[in-house]
Image 1 (cartoon, rainbow, N blue to C red):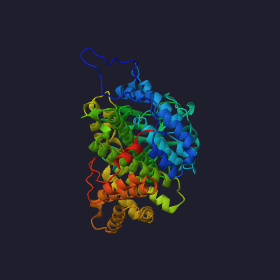
Image 2: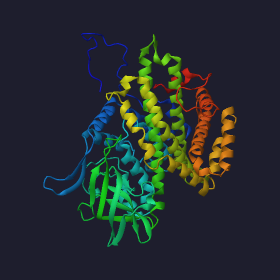
Image 3: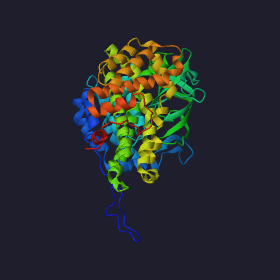
Length: 548
C-alpha cells in the first residue's frame, strides 16, 4: 500500500532517481497481448467478466494482502487446548481475503459455468491474471476446477458436490460441507516411496457399509483445509480413486491426521502438509481398480493451470522490470532507452507473449472435446505447455530481478516472492522428465496428436523462413523414433517453440512474430535473455508489453 507523503528530503541527501510506487494495475485492460489472444481464440464472450477480474486482481491492496499472507504463513493446529484432535490449519486473514476474491471471480469453476462457451479459455485467462499478485491461492482453485471430470464419473457424488463447487461463495468455516455455502476440493496422490510414480502407492482401502476405510499416508498434501480430497488407494481390484471428505456423513471429523506442514521454498501462503489415514472414510470415484484413469482428466486440468500460472508470474515479473527501467536512470539515460537493456526487456516480452499464446491455444482445444483433432491437441498440448512455460518461468524471473539491481533482491520488493514462486509449477503435477515422457505417450497413444500439432504449424507456413525450417526439422525429428525417449526434452521444447511461433505469426504484430522466429527458431538461439539478433524492432516490442 502506498504510504502517504513519504519524506524525500533527508538530513544527508535528497531521494532522487527512484521509481514511483506502482499502485493499482489493470491486469486485463493494461495487457494488450492478453486481450489479443483471448479474442483470437474466441473468448470475446468473456471480455466483461475478464475486465472486471483484471481490475479486481490488480489492485494495490490485493498485492499488499499477498505480501501479508506470505509474511504470515499458515500454522498447523493439530489439537485444541484440551488435547483433542482437530487437524486444522489457521491462516492469516489476508489469505482468506484473497481466497474470497478468487472464488468470487470464478477461479474454481469458471470453465464449468460456461461449458461449450469457451469456458476453459476464460478459466485460463483468469488463472494468468490472478497468479500475478499471489500464487498461493491458486492451488485450491486449480484442484477444485480440475476435480470436476473425475467427480462426474460417479453421478451420485457429482449431484451432491457440483452445486457446492459451482458456488461463488468462499466459506472458510471448518464444518461439514453440507452446512457450507461453498466448497473446495483438493487431491492427495503422492507417497514417500513413489513420488510421481503413483502406481507404487501403498495406501489400502477396505469396503464397509456405505463406503471404504483407507489406511496409509500421503507425503504432499497441499491445501489440506479443502472440504474433500481425491485420493488414490488400493483395493483388491487395484489402484482406485476415492473422495475423502474432512467430515464423515454422521457429522464427526474424519480421520485425516495432519502430521506437519511443509516449510517450503515458495508458495508459502498456501499450506502443504503430510497426512496419515487410519480407517479414514471415503467413497469410491469411478471404477474399482481404475483410479489412474479416473484422475487423468484432473491431472490435465492442473497442468494447464500450471502453464497459465507460470505465464502470469512471468508477466508480472516483466511488468515490474518495465516499471523500474522506465523510471530509473543510469549513465545519463533512462534504462528503458539503453540499447542492451532494450534487448533484454524485448526478449522477455517475447517469452511472455509466447507462453500466453501457447497456454490459451491449448485451453481453447480443451473447449472442444467432441472434435478429435482438438481433443488430441489438448492431450499433447497440456504437457508441452506445462513443460515449456514452467521451465522458462524461473529464468525470466531471475532476469527481471536483475533488471532492478540490488533493490530487486530486497524483500520489500515483490521480486523475491516471484522468484520463490517461479519453480513450483514445474514440480507440481509432474516435473520436466514426466512431461517429456507424457508427450511421448501422447504421440504413441493418440493417433491424431502429431497430425494435430503439424496441422497447427502448417497454418502458419510461409510466415518466416526460420519458422519454415524449424517445422521441417521438427517433422523429421518426430518421425525418428530411434532413442527418442532420451531426446524427449528437446523434442518437447521444439514442439513448444514452433507452436508459439505459429501463434505469433498468425495473431501478434509483425515485429513480435519476426523477432520471436529469428531469436527462438533461428540457428543462433542461445537461450539467454538479451540476445535478440540485429534487426529486431525492440522499441515496438517493448511498447506492446508496456501496461496501457
